[in-house]
Length: 108
Image 1 (tube, one colour):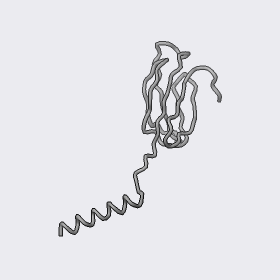
Image 2 (cartoon, one colour):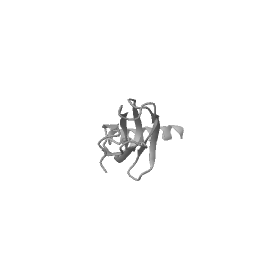
Image 3 (cartoon, one colour):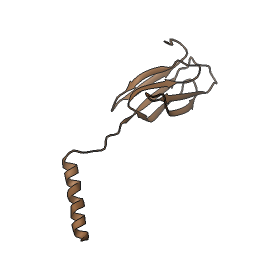
Image 4 (tube, helix red, strand yellow):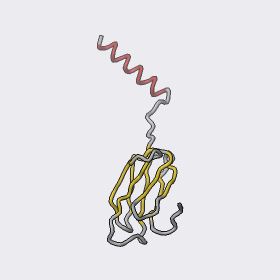
């Protein structure tokens, strides 16, 4: 009986592999820079929110610092930090979105 189960498992694995079924990662990466025009010596809590406004990632950053946020759901995202301009963009598969947060040029 164990031999039959092993054969069935092997056949199922081959069929799945030949059919092209694979796991697709539906998350992406956002690279965030805090502009040097932000208040020096002030720490900013940078937040990345998904399309529903739910917090996905956050990190404390200083002006001039860069950081990558991984595991961000694809689609519309918002990147914000108190006192800096909020930016909205769209994250696509196999793409890294680069965002620079600063104090100038905010569009409401």
